[in-house]
Image (tube, rainbow, N blue to C red; front, side, top):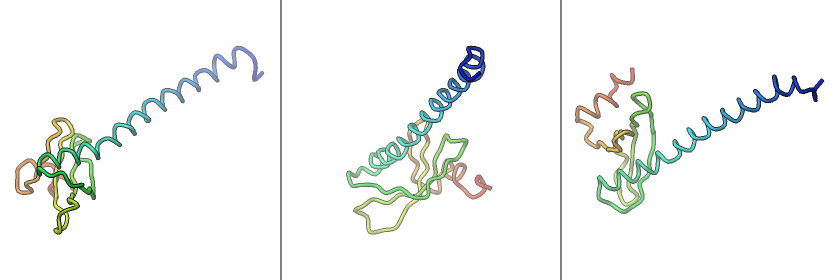
Amino acid sequence: MLKSRPFILLVVLPLALIVVLGAAIFGSQALSDSHVDSDIQRALAQKLDTSSDIELSQLQKVQYGYGICGLYRTSSSENGYASFFYDTDSENVELDINSRLYKSRCGLSSVC
């Protein structure tokens, strides 16, 4: 029964296709998420005009994944962390926490 043609065509082949399709979808999602951190660090370094390493912390996806709020700190800075908003579509970084863009995406009212 396990080696019969109908069993292979009706059970094994569809299951194999589902596994391959699932691996392709979730694998590509995992790969795209791994590049976001380096994109944010690159955008922050460009905005701050610095070549020192940037440490990211407390990253949170907002706006259905189209933006990321979080904290950053440069390795050369003696100060603590500062807040930022990163727009994944335009790859733009907003550092002003009093700006309308930051408040509408990362403010407490937008999280609740």
